[in-house]
Image (cartoon, rainbow, N blue to C red):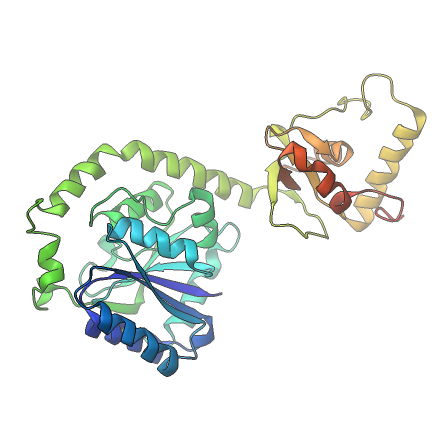
Length: 354
């Protein structure tokens, strides 16, 4: 799995290089690690960051990717999402420029730990940071599935703090948090003796007020948002546990599994025919389809419209109903695109060999 470490950074090029080097020196499979950084274009150390990027691409060339994104000044909550949108990882890791990875083979150990969630890939994992232990997840690790479900990494609503707390609480609501005490990424925070630099002070004492205090108010008012996130992710967990009719051929990114009981079907439940008066060849077709799926499996996904109408594959849906299969592979599309997808799921005599 590719791990993408996502890190907004400000006025800390030296810390940033230390962080990069620690990740590089402790990773076993560097080719599966991506590091992305967001730097405000008003950063006083912007030239040092640009030099660091050039240097890093050479010294740490074994990484899958290392890149600095320079853009408008914005909250780290938004910056993390900008980086998540650009990353290619299967696993998204919240980074920070005052972290130092200390555990050798952390990437391989992480793979082992996450294997227990492979059925649905819904989790909030976290390493030992030297400050919080198990009681709090300061640097959440989530899956691509989690990100795709919610459409974001962080909530994007905070000025500075509480992004980690927000994600952690959603994981707690799902009973899907996972602490990894044997993997250590030490947080060299000012509260533990690191210097109180301009970046720390900027977010706690600037003229517009203590951003942590403001973010606490936002956090307290957004429990309903976290509950909505929980419910969306719970659907994925349920799908991971559902019995499925899986297609052999998937050749489009719009593929997903859909619950059979949520589909709007055109076939009658008793006769398995179109309308109430089926033609004999329709009955025979359904019988042959069932025999073939029993023997060989389903070849193609069905096609489903945005409103869950079955555009192609009603017989395959009824096969699921008859066999107590809870979900079926489908291309979920806009109805006007159906002609483009017909050839991806077209049924002819060779698709269901007997």
